[in-house]
Amino acid sequence: MDAATFKQIFLPLHVSLYRMAFRLVENQEDAEDLLQECYIKLWLLRHDAQSIQNPESFSITMIKNLCLDFLRKTKPEIIPTEMLQIGVQSSEKQIEQRDELEKIQRIVNQLPAKQKQVVELKYWNDLSNEAIAKQTGLQRGNIKMILSRTRKLIQEQYFKWDRK
Image (cartoon, rainbow, N blue to C red):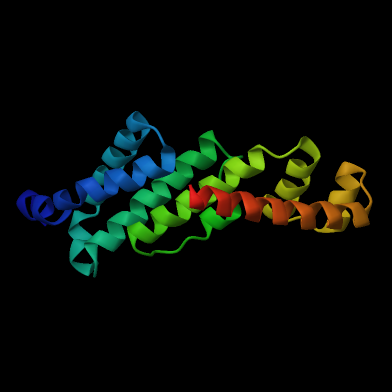
């Protein structure tokens, strides 16, 4: 693929790739750096570009993976496991899911320390109630109660947020 064809195929994707990067890393300079890195990788793969069925989907997946790798290196506590499981979907759906996860993360950050710890151990670290009990010193029954009450609280706060 020559430079003109590359520009014709990949440059129109610039805005959507930048938006995706900015939404994920939440920093203009990092998003621009990651976008540039994405374009470099795409340029290096230009000889194999004929085998790419959907250049837009391929590019979005590449920028998403670059951003997630960047976030893992710089902010490992911020990426919940659900974010890592997002497949190749439309960028709008990914952005909506990211916004929902951000809302939930903000609500969790406002919880009292014990509730926050139990929720993060359960849902972010995927620990069993027994493992949480060993780590926190709480009884299993207390953990179940904390999780139940916290889920209800998060749900209430989430829907209050949506009504605003």
